[in-house]
Length: 589
Image 1 (cartoon, rainbow, N blue to C red):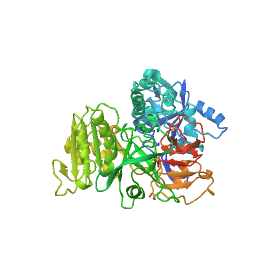
Image 2: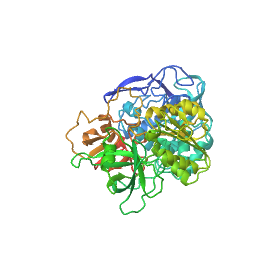
Image 3: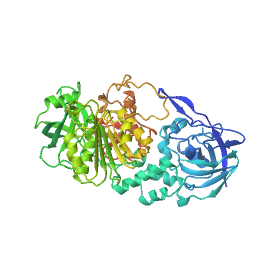
Image 4: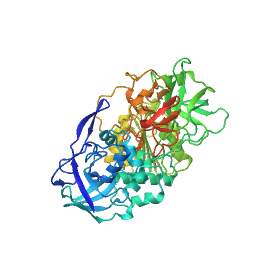
């Protein structure tokens, strides 16, 4: 008979960590006497990060004494106390390889249901003083699990734990944990998981993403963790020279360059919406200038077309506009990026502002080339006709589609701009405008433009009933940080590190979106820690190679990992939380 050994609670607290403050409720301590368990937690308990923990499906965390004994031997430690792993219930029995998702248990007066394994998180490593603990929990199949409270009631250490129902599909905590976090995603197992009503919504979405990738053949990478459909690995590593065969003026500030292979062989096809990274050397004696540009041509044409907005003081755009001529060569990395057109059956909405039209234009070109029968909406905002790139090109493409709709908004139209043909409304592309257009809520929507533009429209679409998982955005600059539990501070612009761990002893690391190149020193520890030293915006959660939140495109170069990964990233990507460069590298950060 399983037994409740200890009830552990703890309110969130601010804990110093690596020069910052993290807000966490991972420190739990056993209590004596009865405690009431309510829908969201145990009385006296709280969670610090409600995005990763807590809520009705993650109200109570359970960990087993058998795993305590296992880790004491494995880690050669004898200092564990109840609540050591951040759990609310320390139990004897209920092993992860026997407890199933959907199992129901009565403990004292309360009734519970198993909903999901523990989420991998750096804070269990912080509590254990073992940074690799999140990865170890997964690799050794001992994650622990969460309970949903079906009936509130009083529990107490010493209560018997009685199973009242076995979960449908009889899929164990260990099985479903491995299904998400390791590299094996058998279709039958994914379908089993999705048939379990008790499985928490977040894990259901992860299983659906993995299954969708299998259905579309887009199986590179773990979309269940990243939330992004997999894309094939880049067609080549590093840079190759491509010849400029055409230069086209698209508007007063936007121009296009068409590129081909020097031997005139067809270039590998890109997915509609992807970008390439270009390395330029305006000063042969100085550091190269590296920029990324969306592909705006027809995918699969055998050539690439990039479209560039000439910025007033732009080093990259200025060099390309003033110094690159026909038959010159540019160093170009292979197409990459996950902002790509999906093969779902519903309508397609393409929304852009200014030069943000470039990736969605490639999507439109693909839809026109394949005579796609889906309803397609093209919505674009520009200042006026002189600042409106690709106007005639878009009209021609839309005419080739059987169910197309178009709305162009000019914020400051000229007298020569004709309302009705050149544009349809005066003003910007706003939430109010989108609401007035009657866009289909079931559409896959792709948005590219300034960050505030994308954020505002994304929120508006969700408020109008759009599925947030079907709204996709492309960011030209650095993506926002994900640093769970870290107290927000004013983030300075990316810079060279101010506190050096020693003289540079290794290869160079370039953060392409941040325009920084830093010599490597082993004292940084990992590429993530180097990025943090430079205040480069980063994304992470487990910091031990499991959750893939830190997965970053590796434009060129090679890395080594400081641990055995349970699920390596796809080709052309790197987990920066646990890797170091072995050659000069360029990261898409």
